[in-house]
Amino acid sequence: MKKIDLPFASKLTSPNPVSLICTRKPDGSTNLATVSWWNYLSFNPNMIAFAMAKTSYSGELVRSNHQVVLTIPGSSLAQAVMNCGSCSGRDTDKASRFGIELISVEGTSVQIPLHSRVAIVCRLKEFHEAGDHYLYLCDVEQTYGNIEENALFAWNGYSCVCPAVKAEN
Image (cartoon, rainbow, N blue to C red; front, side):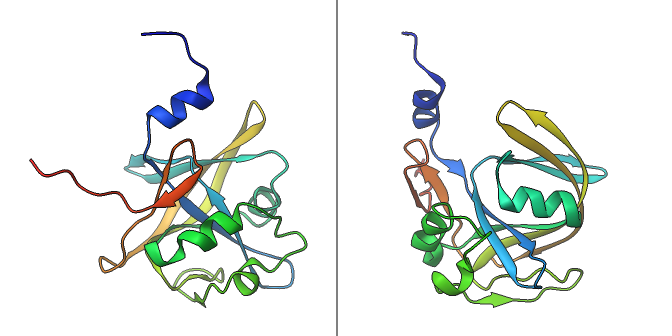
């Protein structure tokens, strides 16, 4: 083995799960942010965690509203997911700009992309500083799934997103 930097390690550990963090903006519309670092924390009680840059508008909304829906986007949203990570929702309606159809789910006023494999409705429990990011710990209130959608994963150090293919034994 040879010494490498952490960004290169992220390429070597591909694929990584990718998600869209859905939050409610002050005008009632939905903001979408691409996040590649999230994880299940506990199944009793049900909890997840995700990390976002300290400067993230979505993170600001999570901290003020305490509501968030983490979705696992379907493969038809691959380009939109990349686009959502390239601009701020502070001054952009990403769903409209990138042609993402939104739907409502029970248990939250935050809308989610129609083409989602999983939607995890959460309430912020706490957040912690983690370098240039905040780590958000959330209680899961509801979970929804659609097995007809293929989940997206981030590849090559988060430079592209596409479904993973299961290796044959």
